Amino acid sequence: MKDFIVLVDQIKDWQVYHPSEHIIAAKNYLFDTRFGNENNRITRVLNLCKSYKYLSDGYYCSLLAEARGHRVIPSIKTLNDLSKKRLYLYDLDDLQEVAEQAANKFTQNASGLKSIAFRTYFGHAKDPLFKGLSRHIFDQFPCPILEVRLTQKKIWRIESVVPVPFTDLNEAEEELFGKSLEKYSTRIWRLPGPKKNYQFDLAILVNPEEELPPSDEMALKKFERVCAEEGIYSERLGRKDITKLNEFDGLFIRETTTIKNHTYAFSHRAFQEGLVVIDDPNSILKCTNKVFMYNLMEKHGISQLPSVFVSDHSEDTLQMLEDKFSYPLVLKIPDGSFSIGVKKAKDREELKLLLADFLKKSALVLIQKFLPTDFDWRIGVLEGQALYACKYYMSRGHWQIYDHGKSGDDVSGDSDTLELSDVPKNILDTAVKVSSLVGTGLYGVDIKVIDDIPMVVEVNDNPSIDSGVEDLILGDELYRKIARAFLNKQKEGR
Image 1 (spheres, rainbow, N blue to C red):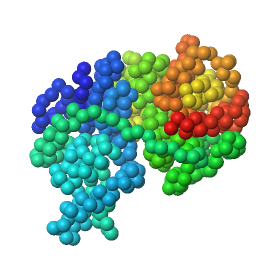
Image 2 (image 1 turned 180 degrees about the vertical axis):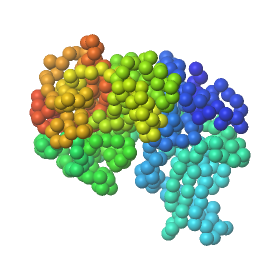
Image 3 (image 1 turned 90 degrees about the horizontal axis):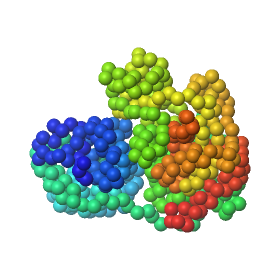
Image 4 (image 1 turned 90 degrees about the vertical axis):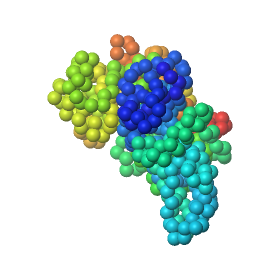
């Protein structure tokens, strides 16, 4: 396979440009296993899908490219950043002076103009006045085509930055895009380095109203007490306190994470500010999407539940699933948590109905073979080492650990906490290995043992730590290890 490929929704979209063997249809890239087996060759991927919307084909192309170890533009981080205006405008704050200077020059002979829109092509703009601004924006958010809008109130400011499909370009823009692409394809892609760290104070993000928070009140109080003993100041923050982050040197997220709400915004801003973050934004991006983790584990040869992901509910797809697995089948929305977005189909009729419903929410749906067990292992991993081990039993009378049809203490099943020395070595080794693919933070690895083989169910970036459960063996030492992890990362320059 070529070291540089360009992804488009359909090959015919490229017909106005020179034909090339580098042009690949998005669906082929998503489903052809050849693209995940390059024997460590570095493949560069340019994603030109029409839509980068969350859980669209374009989104999954960037997601799977990263899982396969490819260097992709735009990255999944860029896509998520550009989807949240409050995030990218904050990141572009340093460019407001550059934007104002360019806009003032552009409007010298056009009094009364209050809005300017221009497009950038790999950091290049048609008008030389916006050359510097275009380059800086592209360096911050590497995306093939962006439309930048400036507006004037008291002064000129960047109002919005939005990705544009290459299929929306007119003839003149197509020529500029083609030339810019040709120049860009020879450049080296790189990632920005981390910022400087400072003296340590720790913010803890919590949501008192969350039904199933990662830590209960007793666990939070234990952690705060241990932090004080370790010389760490800690303070709880809520969703409206994001502007306070620059007062701290670390962020510990104790609210269920998702890239769709403020938890990712907190993580992203904290990381950009140079804070030590658990969960860091990259861990959230990876762990909260099951399709990404499936491909990442497959690439690295880690045993997992027999799975396949599909993008339609056609008769051919249904037949393929029946040939591959027997009923019942488990369907999962890629970004579900706490057993939310997980259903079981007992026959073809139910499978088709559930698939149709799931595909309204996501371009891909994960299908797994149903392998019932009495419990799942949960191995907590911190800084690349096993921290605790639990057995989470299925909710009484239910096939999952969490039964959202119940309330109170009956939502989840029972649990046992074990000494790490009492856990089979292959289970611990699997948990440490898979978490190392994600990062060096705090993770909870769920494992089913089938025929003595540990099979990874999922990796949680925001694992539960409740008083009397995960801390049952280590007690205060569990919280001490987490507190010291923040200090260690600070000393390492994050």
